Every structure is written in structure tokens, then in C-alpha cells.
Length: 144
Image: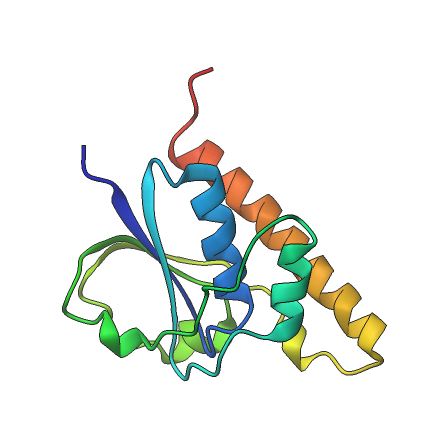
């Protein structure tokens, strides 16, 4: 059976979409082919990498990808925007069956001391983790 492709889209593909990609791959990589991209890719944020490594994720091979490299080249069962800007400015994505919007606050925009920034990244990471787990129960319940 062919896996359903899922694309997580964010503005910079530096934190939220990368985190969502990593979680979905871990929880359902046997059921979904998972990607992430950005409208203006800037590179993986060091704090996103750090908070995922705290949970045992190796993000060393992750890199920001431009949405344009996927447009018209692949069909996605789901296009999931994880930031308001991507949802508002994303071009019509002809290669997606179902479009969802999961608005998460941008942790990289948080101002404060480094420890406070790290706490914000952890908070957003944990919210994304919960959302992925919840969505998986809705979209394809597991048979245990």
C-alpha cells in the first residue's frame, strides 16, 4: 500500500514545521511519507534542534526546504500549515487533497533571555507533539 504524503508548511521551515515533521515520522512513518517546507527557508533554528535532541531526535540531517521544489512535482494527501503567515500567503497548492491549519506561535520570535527562549521552544514543541498524537487518533485510529 502506498503511503499518504504529508507536507508541513511554515514561513521559514526552521522550527515548527521541522518539529512536526520529526514527530509524525516517529509516530507514523510506517503510514505516512512526511515532508516539511517553507515559503522563505532560512535553516534549522539551533533551539529547535536542541529541544528535539532533548527527546532523543537526531536533527543533524534536517535542512530547510523551499516549497517551490515540491510544487507541481508531487501529490500530497495533506498540506498542514503550522503558522498564520504560511496559511495566509501560501499559493494555491494544487497537489494537496486536504488542507489543514494548525496555528502555533513562532518560538523564534520570542524575545527574552536564552533560557526563556529555550522554554518557549519546549512549550511549542510539546504543543506540536500533542497535536500530532491527537490528529493520528482522528485520521487513522490504531488497532491494538
